[in-house]
Length: 135
Image (cartoon, rainbow, N blue to C red; front, top):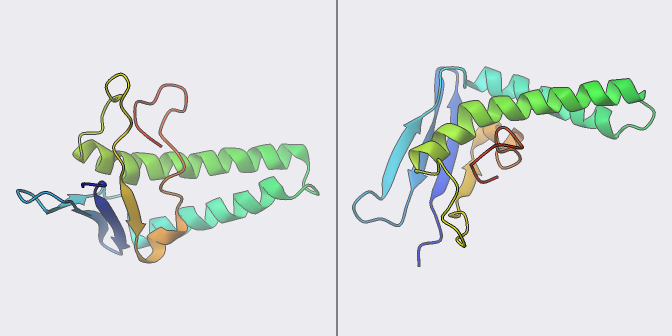
C-alpha cells in the first residue's frame, strides 16, 4: 500500500532542495529545487523570528498589541515557508487543487533535515480562506 511520499527538506548556504521518495517503480525519487530565497541563513532567520514571536504571543504579561504584532510576525514566517518550501513541493506532486468530491487529501510525510527542522512546514496552507492545498 502506498502511504504517500516522504519529503526530505534541506537547506545549505548556497540553496535548498527537497528530495522526494515515493513508492513508484517508474519514479522512486526526484528532487525539487527550492527558490533561491531558501538558504540556511534565511531558514535560521525565519525560525528565530517564529520562535521569538511564539514566546511573545503566549506571554500574558505582554500588552495585547505586542501579542497581536507577534501573531502577524508568525503569519509572515508561515507565509514565507509556504511560498518558498511547502507550496513548490506540493505543486510538484500535483497537489494543486481540491481532491475530488468525497476523497481525502493524499498523505505526505515531511522530513525536514538540519536547520529546516526549526520551521513549521505542516502548519500553514497559503491563503487560509481560499487555499486549495492540504495543510
